[in-house]
Image (cartoon, rainbow, N blue to C red; front, top):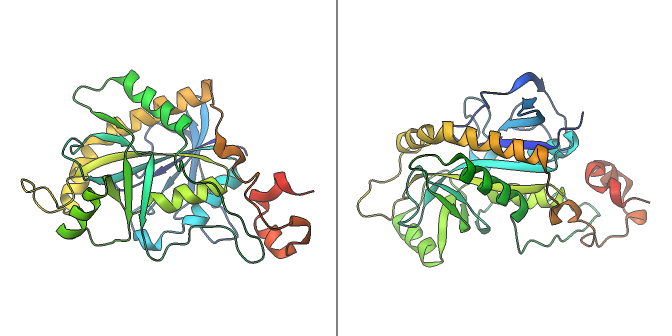
Length: 290
């Protein structure tokens, strides 16, 4: 079954309320099981696949997430466009709690994340200077603009600092990330973006601001209660944005450089690569096998 649009929901976004014809699929991948069963259904006339990033019941730490299984499962289902909704802290005064941000850059502060499918006899180096698909991000931006929510502020562009977690930042770390020009901070999206690019899936982050991290002198330190409270305020808006984005993708799916990301990235001659590794990566390599 080909499902060309995927949605990964983060903290507070554990389901898509208006999915119709729902089916739960247990997807086996060479990298293990995804975070949860993938929910497929119809949204705005399009077949989509939804995955709760942390599992239903929010039972997986950011460092425990099976990133490779999550992205590979989407690839196996036929996903070509992947919308990642994520809770983030703001590193800038102008990006206020309940605002939406469409980051276009990442800084990696993680320590123990699997962030490539390759190895075991096959080497690939993807181009990652532009880590977000600008075409897909543009569709999301247009959807937000079209919906014109009262009081909702959209910020296009900015750097997402991806930290290890699960603890939130120290004040010193938060100030450091601000000095680097960071816009928002989260714990999950960079491994997803790297793996989606290797899987030739167009990827974009819809970042939902929940707090001011801990740098802001006029706001309390980050708590789970604060994060979830603000995210739930924006959950209905986030679902509406995703619905409108899916509608637009169905009507006019954009061309994306991500869809041919492996074309010049694989260094190992595949005709002499290990058969076991080629079999393991079959969903990624089929366009490049003789």
